[in-house]
Amino acid sequence: MLSDVKRFDMKKPPMRQHLRLLMRLLVVPTLVSHHNKLTKIRMEGIKPPYLLLCNHNAFMDFSVALKATFPHCANFVVAIDGFLKREWLLRLIGCICKRKFTRDTVLIRQLMRVAKRGDIPVIYPEARYSLCGTTAVLPASLGKLCKLLKIPVVTLICHGHHVNSPFWNLPDHHVKGTEAEMTCLFTAGELEEHTHEEVTAAIEKAFRYDDWAWQKENGKRIDYPKRAEGLHKVLYQCPHCGTEYRMNSAGTELFCESCGNRWRMDEYGVLSAAEGETEFPHVPDWYEWERGNVRREVEEGTYRFSGPVRIDALPNAKGYIDMGDGTLTHDMTGFTLTGNDRGEPFTVRFPAETLYSCHIEYEYLGKYGDCVDLNTLNDTFYIYPKGRDFAVTKFALATEELYAHLHPGKNGPPSETAE
Image (cartoon, rainbow, N blue to C red; front, side):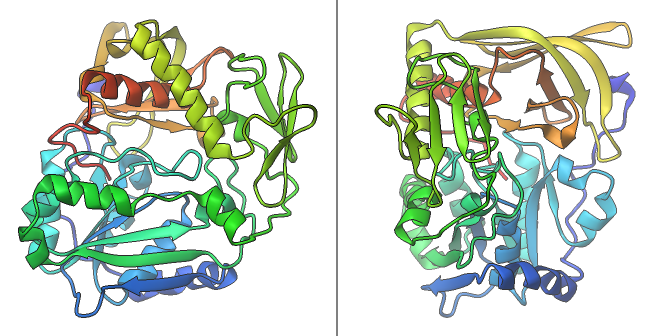
């Protein structure tokens, strides 16, 4: 039974980063092939320890972060599935484990250890790859964390990584001239002069980005012949007929299987309808339209999903545990997962008022399709809905809108620290 399995040791102190030179050498080919340009702003005289906050669009983000922090030691916060089957290696290179979107005071103590010994704690506060190349919701606790650590706050914002290898279409699209800005937002002294709310607001401003706008404005041509494939995972609702879960994609086109409308993505990321008016030439505008529709369901109190699912659990880094079939309900109260563990029924609830966002995956590991992973402090559940009448993207949007509805003007719980 899952209750008998040993959990991942979150309290084990993080090691100093080993293999620093080798790690930097391994990422050089990626950085060179994409002609990456790193610009440093207000970084004169800034030395470790400092807190590095990075945006998150693709695996290449880590390559740029290693370049930006060289030659110093950095400790990256990484989700538990990153440790899978290689915990020894991830610990050796200084990674700190985190279960996504949980209220984790242990992580705060680990970050304080890293700062105290003079190294660089590295956090990806969006806690997941951006779904459509724009800023994901940030936890409201960021300012509090910065004030607690009492070290300079530095941001690393990368551009071009999403359009080069989007979360929904991972192959390298060979974008040249990717860019990143490494900026000192606050020195330790400046941090003392601002409230945690002001610090959070400054971080949110620094994290405003749009990879699709960056591509168009900089004339980055992408001739990858399958550049639109998978986009229907994000754009799951047809703007022409309003039908959900019947969008599909192939090659350079999106299309609705319900009404037959089609949209083509050009080499600069712009969408155009095959016939009639183009509702949303800009991908993020379509995504935000979907969000608005979900928001209305939440405001009207009608949002609800319930259906059969397959469940895997990840209590530690040794491997997934097959929990069989179950039922997932997502409604105005939050997520409720029910199942049967070796003959013992179980129910796990994730209240809407405590979950400001959630993590989703598309075609995760090529196993059972799309999934949402939900976390307690001890367990991570990978939940795969069955059938076609769902979109994990809608789960993510609804989670954020439910939290916003219950906490007006607040985007994250007080004790939340994302990875």
